[in-house]
Length: 417
Image (cartoon, rainbow, N blue to C red; front, side, top):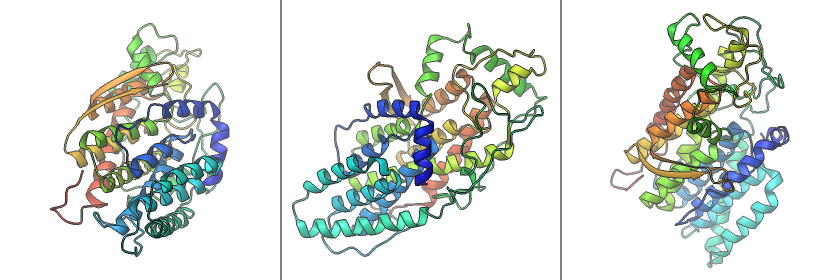
């Protein structure tokens, strides 16, 4: 995974800048060590969402098992270790997070070393600190050893087609398909990457596809005269790496419920492992379906839509097939994890992107966030409406499965998020 992270940082330099801007919006009125390291990981300069999701999932999985080994509140994820009595949970959390992040994002090691020193300086008892460090390091090393064999570095190629409905490399760069190997990566929580099937894209001869094609041609073009200013703002707001923004939704719900450090460890482990698995499943389906992007369909023309060889989408089309939408499937997975844990769709959430320019959007429910993401990808001109809706639903199934089958409370009497 490490080699791919370094390559992706070079290939997506502009998106890295956007990610760094997003980090300024992550704040906390009340902090604990899990929240501290969650903010650190969310702000890392990783431009590609599936890569960032995998890093966050590995880190939070290790963090959960480190703190849970010292004081078990929930089922172990994968790596239980024997912890000495009195071992510092803060030291275990900080060390587990640091070891995973420093290994997966080595370019940030100096900053991560500083963050670790700051975390450990707050712990006064040297013996408990040392014991906690051993626990965190042991769990993190086991996580890294497992993920080193997750197939992320397997060689794979895209298979662009030439026929109607088949994915073709898209302008302006005509770049090869990104991350074609991702669909073969070992999931974090799913039994297999093929565990949940997508609904299936509409037939090209269906009224549903005709509706989708008409909508995106009218509203998703760079020079659209029908798209409103707010629709454009939504498309731009969700244009980059969605992982920091979705993470901020979970942080907002944590703050309102005033979760404990144990509860936060579980919350973020479930959130990010579900998101990572949803994205793995998404890319598995993408390269099996190999569905054309809107820009290909519109330029070629189809059905009642006449060819428009100069049509451009509002955002540059990402270099991989249309179906399903990675942004929407990740959003559905995270939203469903939060619904299952908190028993509510309600969320009070505002976010500024980028902080310096002051574009703020506010939400009152998880469903509103899901719907805006679906809208945003259509208004951006890069995903058909049905693709977005099917992807949200598939993501929800991944999220529900994660909560039902992993990190369950040890006893029914213990409070949990």
